[in-house]
Figure 1 (cartoon, one colour):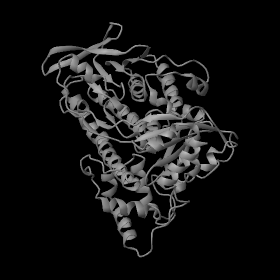
Figure 2 (cartoon, helix red, strand yellow; figure 1 turned 90 degrees about the vertical axis):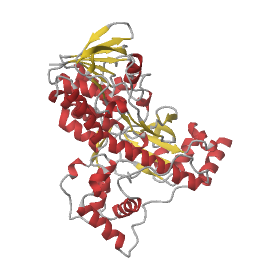
Figure 3 (cartoon, helix red, strand yellow; figure 1 turned 30 degrees about the vertical axis):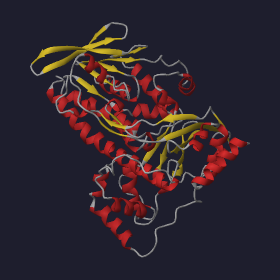
Length: 490
């Protein structure tokens, strides 16, 4: 069995440790943060301080792809999360009845797990900690690679050097360090050429806050009009609520950067005023219904990134892999990050079983996996981020974005728009679009389905208008600015 060092104890690093350790590999996880406190899961998760993982304090969802991965590779982790208060939400409750004769095959996969990121991290951490072949080293980071340049095809990894100067031998090193992708600095320090990355900006500011319902176990204050969420992505801003575990929910407001009036959303009064104006959210922020669990947090939106080190057909160093955000970052507003990290980590673990020698065949298989799993969502994220910004700028009267033109997408714009409209009234189309939104199938896969396309075309050819959107319209940009300014003036 291989000896493996994983640099990073987040979602991807812990998932790989769980999969590899459970198969008998010797695994050591190096994690910068302190270990979590002992005690009940929820209380310990809320006390766990992780300055190296600032995004853990923000809203997360585990979409249908992530649930599929847990069901397949870590059912005990899913059970433990549910026992700690997480819930599975059935997305088909939001499906329109037309176009289908009832439940369809695969509907059982159309679910999301509502859980706070620290709770899921802690459940994963404890599952990994229980494995006899895995060592978790907290307050430790990998500072560099140990390399053997004498291999038949060039450099291969032999271990890492920690920030304390210790050497840790390994047959395989996995960079699970998150968005910073530490392996790039390791390779640069070793004088190894680094393949170019692909990047596409997200161009968004966001503000988020957590709340807890005052009536434990009671009925929700309002409908989840999006199946697993309430609110919407409107013409000039977004206002979306996600339930979480144990009567907790989070609201995130997204805005264009540079809109000075909306930067006031970082204050509790302005944030609440915007929520009260936004469709489906007002009832949730009533002070008799829910209490805030902390301040409003400004959320940095990273760009979409696909690392060249993850997609290069011949890795610059044999035995070096990137997992999760170290390989690919997608716009957080689309909620794919945790699920892609789990899927990538578990499938990389499968590849290590198939290629235990960690040679060029492993590098090629890992690059193929990145192209199949990560590249479609990177491309979609770049396109959707660009489209959202252009739409919001047009509605707010902001100057046109100087960025290059519309990024490529496998689905023509008119066909995508027709499918979005058809999904409001056709259950078959709704299922296809929901599988895209929850990362179960790529846009190219769904739009190559002839049954799906036939329903889209049939809906587009009808003379009746599409169903009207449910609920009141969102505030205009001027109304939103006025409400925020009035609240600030008060």
